[in-house]
Image 1 (spheres, rainbow, N blue to C red):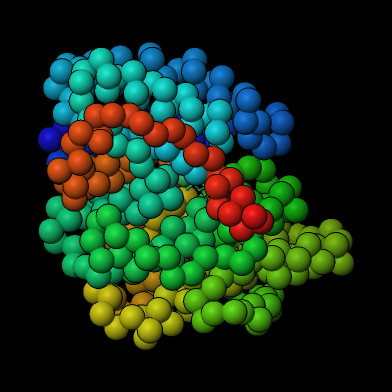
Image 2: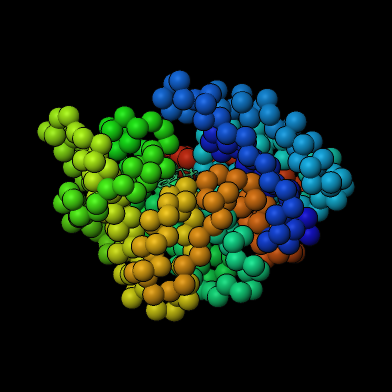
Length: 346
Ligand code: KG4
Ligand code: ZN
């Protein structure tokens, strides 16, 4: 089954064709990083307009480069949320148009869960992957730990009570004036530094044994830099190495804890932008007992192959819902869950 995936939740427009949830036939990503760089962050209105500019030409380019005709597509999957509402609407509207024109089912996909499928794309055939498994999404917006019973069952075990891990990398990089995105720049500097050079704080107060927290580490870094004045290149590298070791070490410790709490877990899937960090991969393989699967570098950050792969599994899990998939009777949702918030206050 050939699935078209469409992703437009933030500052990347991405389209991909994936066969049977595992084989990537074609994958295109157009990053808006340079467009937003001059504003110091992603501007939602600008992001939506950029998606609108490139989405149709990218679809044609994807078909041409993959040597696929529109009618070869069996299913369309699109990011429904969370993300920037204007940006998501562009992808959803385009996906609805393609699905209606081709009379194909359309699967709305949760972007955060889809990241995990980026890691599964690295495994040759999800049959090889044994469930239940632990799954981590470590990105700029989320630090979530799940227990998965199948490719479509996600039980959220823990998330960050404040900043996300990638967000902390970005904020610390900004304090060090390294530019955006911060993660890769800190990793590069850290590779020349000594991890134990600067003692880092460890999070103390938690409501649950698995929760993550990054604001203490960020505040420590802000205070340290304020007090240290001018630093040599080596001192900066040492600081980055020490920070990175603790930012990633916290995740490793939580996964070790989850291994004890959920002994039924057979593997760990790690996804999201921070999964690109090589030191993270090394620490996980050294300190976590379960086999860990990371995405290929192309599928760590936002992409549409993960959307298509997850859409395929959702469709396979509910083949009787074909009529519902053809109705397109749903819409985009943003990061904020208005319905839940209204219920909570009423
Ligand atoms: O998954 P992603 O592309 O976007 C979101 O959905 O948030 O993740 C982006 C995040 C950024 O915070 C970026 O700094 C971080 O992933 N990141 C890294 C590395 N590469 C990207 N963090 C640490 N080390 C890296 N090599
Ligand atoms: Zn993402």
